[in-house]
Amino acid sequence: MQEDYRAYDKIWQRVSPELNPYPEVRAEQAAHASDSTLVTLPAAAGDPCCMGEAAQSELEVLQGFLREEIADARIYRMLARCVSNAEARRVFRKIAESEAGHARRLQAANYLIAGECYRVSVCFAPQRVKDYCATLRERYHAEVCDGFNFQRAAEETTDFCLKRLFGDLSTDEYRHADWLRRLLEKAL
Image (cartoon, rainbow, N blue to C red; front, side, top):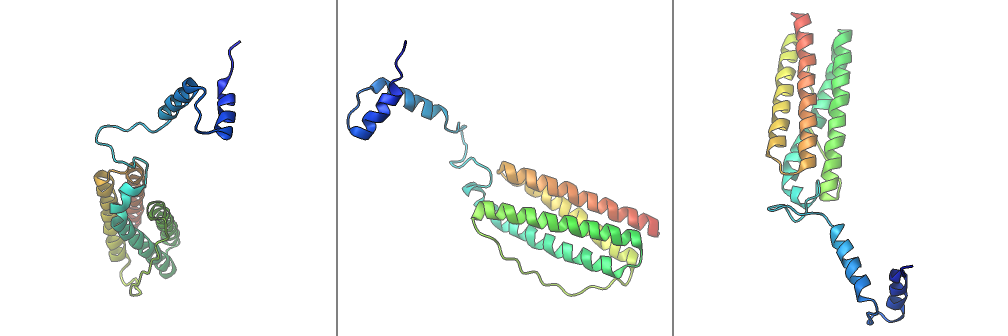
């Protein structure tokens, strides 16, 4: 029967830490400790984890997206109140909800990177829906542009988690554009 010297070694460490009565046990423990650390790849950042210190440079872009998503959510809520078409109201509310969800996801990413909540203040002039089709056209282009910008940010970031987040948001923005295009098709 083989003795478990790890238990004895722990006792000796408490009694007399300067002694090393079982060097092979400590060597084995050190070998296991190095096996459990993260594997670093050549040219990998010192902090390979998602949304860590390496992503600090992405904060300004992320915060710009956050401000825009909050503003978009407000615009769609306002549009939902202004239109008489029940289907358009439903779509505008759904998009507003989605944009608010994007803002929450971006706020969480900001917190994971910076360790503090980003206080957002978005001001914009109240809008009126003078021409329903023109408003749909304007919002369609805004959604497509947002989708493109999220996709470009996903391609440019080196942070894997931000890449996934931006890619997901890009897909959502293009989906919003499709919904708006369908509303326009029915209105023409």
